[in-house]
Image (cartoon, rainbow, N blue to C red; front, side, top):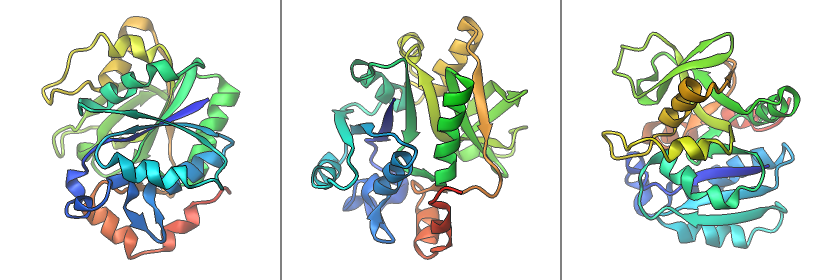
Length: 248
């Protein structure tokens, strides 16, 4: 099974760091963020990656073409028009041969036990769709996730601050069936002129009877939003979170 990692964005929230770096390549404690993400997935047994690149793509390509220790295969595809997460995923359709693939954001790092658990759920429960959710005080900066009996009922992108009745947030790690490409082609761009992945997932639930299994992270499991400058700087000055980058 291949992993798609979204690495194309400008990283406006990380300015001025992104004047010099692609956001996924900003160093922290001796490694670029993207290296941590790939290592976490490699430790689950995954070896095949698709990186959707764009802004400062040469930093990513040059780094990993010289990196042989990971023993992985990387394919690159360029997102020339930044038209959303759904638009990025659609570009990968020709490269996905198996029925399922993993998708993750390139600026979100999860504790390595989470990557392992998602792979375990897929292998043992044979779920076509899995969405990872983390607990938060207010999901207004991400996407509010609503569930019933561990399955997704609704997902609301960037709800107004204080308006969400759910405290679950889209953590940015999925297992998806290839059927997602069909719904992505049907939805219209949002007000942000982006093809929104959550909208395609909801269309599948409502019109195709998809069952989207939600894995709720424990409150003590690590999730770092490295696309946020304040969060990046906090984690840069703290090494305690590195303990979560192993399997327990």
